[in-house]
Amino acid sequence: MASKKTKKTPTFRGIKDNSQVKEIGSMVRDLRNPNWYIEVKLDPAQDKEKFGISQLGLIPRRRVLNVTHAGASKVAGYEKGLKINSTSTWSHCRIADCPIVNIRRQGDRQQWCFSFKAGDTQFFLPQIELARALFFHSAYLTRLALNSNGLDEEFDVQMGENPNRAEIHILPSSSLPMVVRGNPSQRRILAWLLLNKEVRNSFKASPSTS
Image 1 (cartoon, rainbow, N blue to C red):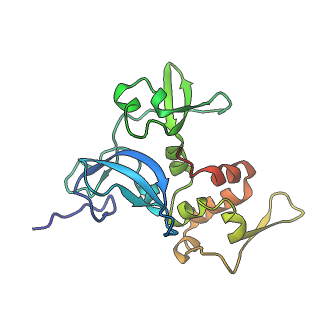
Image 2 (cartoon, helix red, strand yellow):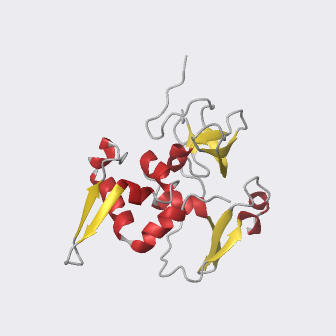
Image 3 (cartoon, helix red, strand yellow):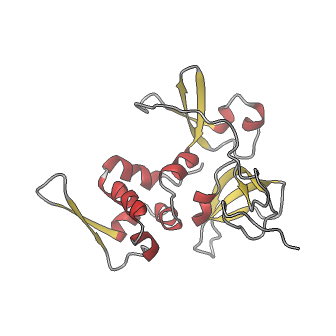
C-alpha cells in the first residue's frame, strides 16, 4: 500500500519518502534546453540530483521532503532569535570557511555565504538561503530572478508627484500568474521588490550560488 504524504510539505516525484535536503549546489542548464535546474544532494543518496529552479523556494537545507510520518517535518537545528540593525559588518566567504568539519567538507563548500557575528556566535549564512527566504516565495518569483531585467520587462512603475504613491502597471507581455495577482501577500512582496531600490538590486543579484 502506498504511504500517505502529510499535507505540510509538497510531494516531489522521483525521490524516496522522508528524504532530507543535504546540500544545495549550483544552477545548471543544458545548452539545448532553456530550463534551469538546481543541483541538490539528498539523504539518503539517490539518483535524482537536480530539481527545477522554480522549486528552489521549497527545498531549504535540512528540510525533509515527501514526509510520511509525524515529526519528520520538524525544522532541523535550533531556533535562535536575532536582531540585525545593519549588515555593513557582514563579510563574504565560502561555506568551506565554516569551522564545523562536516559542513566545510560538503560538496557545496565553495558556495558563497555571509559571515557575521551576533553576540558570542559566529554565523555563516549561505547567500542562496537568504535569497530563498527573502524573495523566492513562489515559482514565478524564482524564475523571474534569473532574468536581471525581469522586473523591467514585466512591470511599469509610474511615480507621481506624491512620493508616497506609485502606480504599478502589469505589462501585456507579463507572465504574472493569476494566482499571484489574487494573493494579497504576494502582491505586497512584488510591490516591495519594485519600489525599494536596494531590495530591487538585491533581487536582481539573488540567484548566484557560486
